[in-house]
Length: 73
Image (cartoon, rainbow, N blue to C red; front, side, top):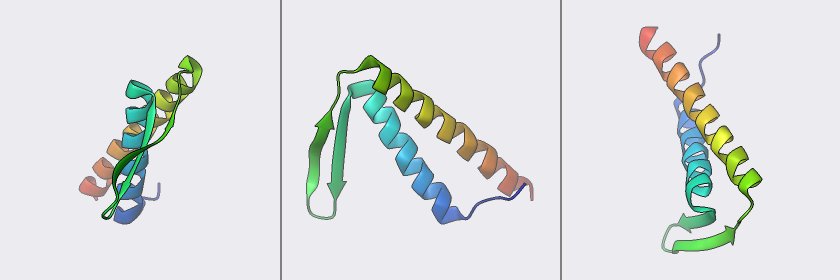
């Protein structure tokens, strides 16, 4: 198996945390340098929130496995 680069792990962690935030709150937030945190979109759909939860958990599991492989090498 090929381990990914550290920057790719960081990017996937940000996406996973964003997906989990959407799954828990139903709100898509955006933030950046000097802009603060703003509401980007909102969803009340239970299906979209479940899909977001599955994507977020899947990415976190993949990240843990990838980091453990890097530590063992």
